Length: 240
Image 1 (cartoon, rainbow, N blue to C red):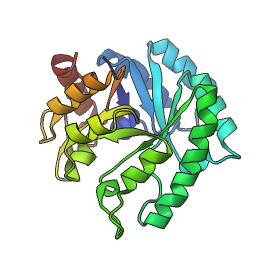
Image 2: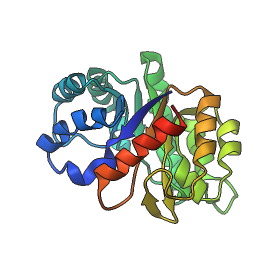
Image 3: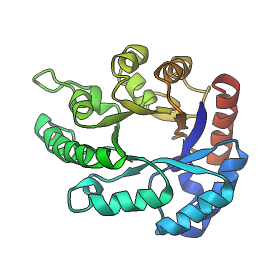
């Protein structure tokens, strides 16, 4: 299993295009082989691909917006991701406060998933904790999203929501294309191993599902480079 890092984890260190492109060698030096994007700081796909190649990294996915997946925008989104060399295209969330809002979001996702799959691309949805709170009819937003597209399960937010991670991941392994491994206490992010998430369960599940990549996301405050480096060390020692 290889390790990727969601670049949001280093958000305070990459306020502009120059610093963003310059972070890739540092990510590689920490021991990561891939990155997941959450914005591009105005860099073109060609600039990003050159920076990735120069650092010896690959793009494992991205968090885009729901509008990027709408029918009129999907071809450009796929073309951008093709240049980056990634075959998984994700969004970091979508409106889901009500069942009706969730259904509208799922309509976009389902159409995009169906259109992208024959071209070799997987559309995925990244959860937070709210998707595990039932609506009045008892339905969970996460169940609606998994019926529309693939899932990238953020295993800290599922844990924080009270879900049994092992049970949920095993029951939905055919819909899961990626996992975020993350730690924290309450809603406060921590470096891996410094919170209370069931990290060993997440690693075991990733292996059981047969995932090629495990994606670190770190939402802790303070020295983000130190925190992500701590996470990289934890992954090497416990999931390598």
